[in-house]
Length: 233
Image 1: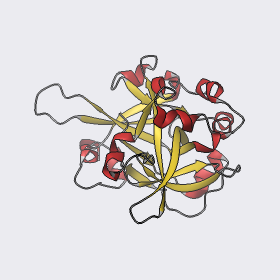
Image 2: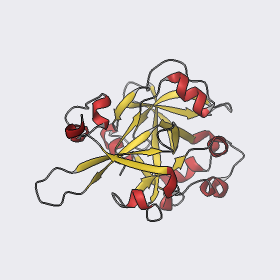
Image 3: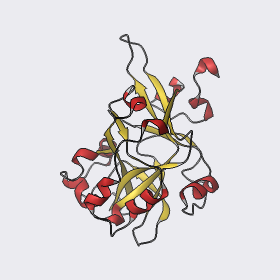
């Protein structure tokens, strides 16, 4: 789940909402962020949180085929401490990250065979900038250049009435500054970090039908029209 999302705000708005300094527009004003693309994240590898670009889809050192990173765009909260790929990352605050967003897409299963699935765009508190709880690592690519990569955490959506109506999973949202800073704090151990995670409260989430053009897999379509169904555009 959560294979596409939005980060439509500019750097000034993101900096103001999250309290971290974002310089430059790379990774911002995006209406259809897709796996394997570079995304805007906040991490603290040297102690102080900083904005950086990371490839969406975790590339652990043992992974030889970078194309397989598509399979690691998400990490399930329920098993994040039992899978070695993720357990060492969540235990280390310097490898926890905030994946910056202001919404995400999820698809409602079609009622009839052959019918296109209807995408929905989810927002928090009416459209504020927030962060997915995420984990990151770095490894060298085939040209021996360091590459940073990231995966976001997902959780059971059964307690959120809006999310569960479309999908049984939802991303772990860190929408408040205290939770965001605690997630990046190296003094916060695994159990404390996990206490920050879970499904967002129903009253903070909203969802609207989006343009099916966001479904495209051969080429990623961009633009604000993706957030509006064709009939309403």
